[in-house]
Image (cartoon, rainbow, N blue to C red; front, side, top):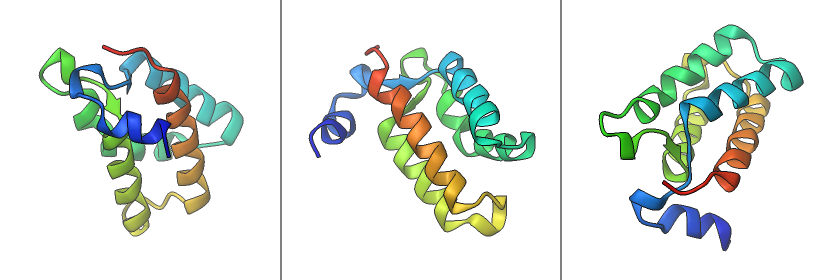
Length: 105
C-alpha cells in the first residue's frame, strides 16, 4: 500500500490531518459536487467531532487512522445515520485527498 501505510504508521505528532479549516473545504465540495444534504453532513460531523475537537492542539484534526475507523463505523451503522454506501465511499475519497495533501504538524 505504501502511502496509506506511511499515513497509518507515522508518529502521531507528524501525521497528516484534516483540520477544521480543511473540513470546511471538504464539506463545501460534498455539498456542491456530490449533493450531500445538510443532515448528512451533520451526521458525518458527529462521527468525527471528537477527532476534530480533541483537547490538545497537536491531536486536533482527523488523521488517516481516525478516518478509517470513522468510515468503518459508518459502513457498519447505516441504520443509525442513513447515509448510503455510495456517499460513504465519496466521503472517504474526498477526505483522503486532504489527508494525502495535508502538511505535517
